[in-house]
Image (spheres, one colour):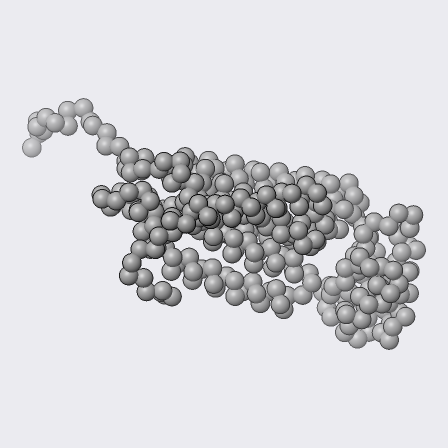
Length: 314
């Protein structure tokens, strides 16, 4: 499938300097935002209380949220749990309030409306569990980046490996920075989306690097910049088709998936877009800036001892 019928090579690398400056500005804004205002950690990381309530009829989530906000629970997260008659209410840690009192207050606030509810289950997620999950999540991302660095270095060349890892770090920092700047809740589903962004961006970068290596071996005349432009042009249709079909699915999840996966869809929507950009303008630009050349990618022919002599046996 071809979305664009390209007859001439697009000069992607002609604008690599402005693209790198743009990436630098976005990275600086993300890091400053993370350092000054941090992240809006979700219940999975901070700890809190989960209360499951049941309704006789399908619950009106909008009305439940309004009733809880009127009762002072402005940070409550309300979502369906299992069926449309089951609702899960998540409350951050409230100092000086025990679980039983909190559960009764939540049910009383909901019962102030037209629909009546009863409490089915209540449980507390301690902050110590949240801290443990936060540390393990960070270690998981660090381990993933190190494994990727080793894999790409063995498969391609260290310049491509460094470019790939910088591109992945670029995608992760910008995605996390988006949640920091906008104050969106960062929970385990968002962390899963960030790891998925790493996988998507890596796949895109590997495809582009593979084509660049192939063209370096096949095209005898041409500078590294020209060969990279040819490779990016050849993979542009594949990149666009993959990105657009993925974005269509994610937009459906974003608009129709509900509050439970809203953060997940938001992170992936932004991550897929920025991952496509980074595979073109970050990974390739870094490899070019580090001086990648034909000699680095053409396999070295090993001379065998006696290869220049005639065979003794017919």
